[in-house]
Image 1 (tube, rainbow, N blue to C red):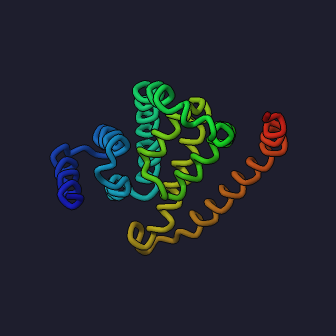
Image 2 (cartoon, helix red, strand yellow):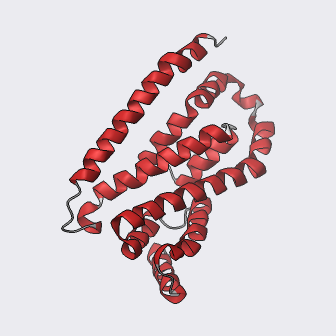
Length: 202
């Protein structure tokens, strides 16, 4: 099934005949479809965009597609399922109130981690953020940063296949600096905000 979908996507690209960043006209709808249903791996779109746009352009396009599709899925899930989930399950979730509070407090950072390390499908990450009613502002920044981290890491890990013969040491060094900056920001936010919020919990 996955192989057939990949063949269909390849055919769609060939039939459209789009060049450069015009391929976003195809990859953004496909990214939203992938974010909603998860019927093919997002890596398929990354590989296609890198093939069409080169290393820098392909990874940038993949970041844009991943960010836009995740925002669309979050908005859809929040408007369609969040209120129903709260009415249906709120009583059963009272004993997990502390957990919910922690998720709402640290939720943005949890989203960054989950986007970076693909241990959960993209659609489930967006759906989870919607049903716990994460603040749109927190979801927006965590989605932008998390998708950047995911695409960057994917590019490094797939360098031998995606960029044969290319020197990716600068990508690796840049990513290490990026992670250090994220860690420093989290520590600062924890010491100036999150720790006080936790002390204020009942």
